[in-house]
Length: 129
Image (cartoon, rainbow, N blue to C red; front, side, top):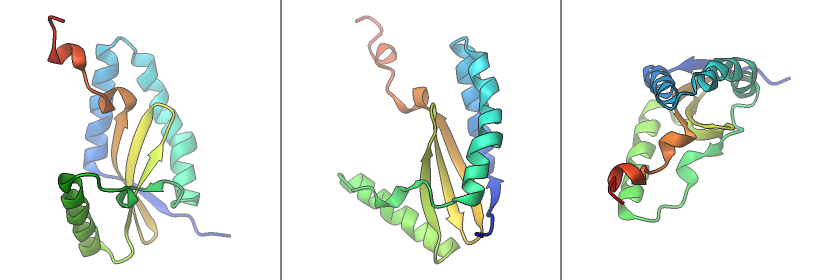
């Protein structure tokens, strides 16, 4: 049997949860946020404890611009400074995208975003059109 990994929340992850709650309150969907802690506790965290490599490798994405290539190089160096065998992975949930680091026997939840936070707000960019 595979050993379970420890899951820890980064301060940024906790800030992201507050931002998601504010977003869902703004769009008058507080019940959507109420379901998130249950989904994390009942599904996501147990999955990552047992199968920490299940998310896709974040740094394996193809770099299609100089900016992305530079960002990947920076992240790779930072992760290498923390741990030799560390990985950055993303876990896709029904309405959320979660970024985590896998370092030795620990999974660090770094960031979570609601799908609405991943798109452009074209109405705000051009309100008169």
